[in-house]
Length: 125
Image 1 (cartoon, rainbow, N blue to C red):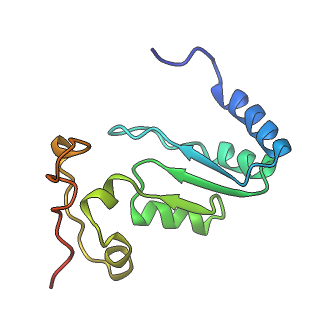
Image 2 (cartoon, helix red, strand yellow; image 1 turned 120 degrees about the vertical axis):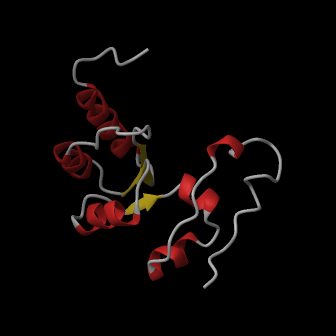
């Protein structure tokens, strides 16, 4: 389908201004999450901050390194991890300790059985 606007970020910023006026508690932005998807522009993140005073959460194929970079730059309040958490029930410990991550088996995601839902192992030395 694609986008129908030449610059959708203009529309997004206008929507964010309205959400700020309404007083929502946080803004959760789901970024493109396909392979080799472009990152959101730095300028867009800065504009989000300028127009929204509460917490801003970003999600979308973040690694610990990329999330840390965005947080340290002050461009986000929180980074959400989806797929890595599915395959790594101990994800915070793995990130904190620099332990390797389990690979995600996408063929079992959201399949309705325990396979790929409760059978990923926690890290073991």
